[in-house]
Length: 143
Image (cartoon, rainbow, N blue to C red; front, side):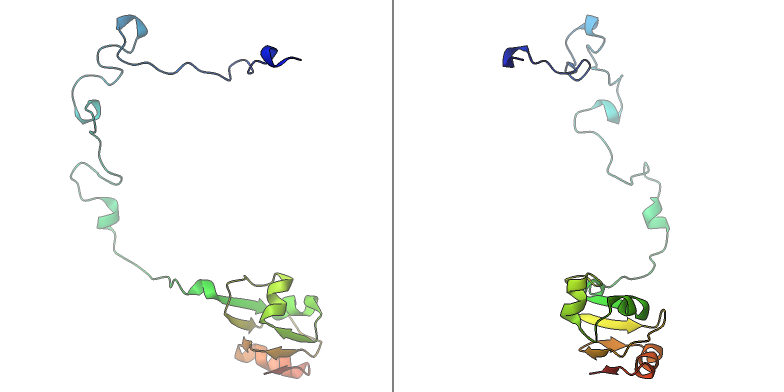
């Protein structure tokens, strides 16, 4: 194989569409835009969501809900995940290294999903009321 013998695969290269280059091209005169109207003109097209003057859908529907941008700093960990982790002492760093929570998490909370059989000591981690009962019943503690 030589460099001068390399060719692209068949159909890989397409000729650029050359508009306004005569009748024979099939794209002469109006360049495939038809006659008159907003879509035929240079720079003439509507903005996204424009419905021809009719009140657009995004303005007809009521505003609803709110999602805090601070939620990305919150993280939840289940009792089930902690049981599988198998550590006796758990803090935010250990959970991040295990990949159970995101690296951006600042507020960490244990939720009661699953059961806990091992005694685990939690440092700097919150828990729901039900999770707290389950942790203390297994002999663990929240510091």
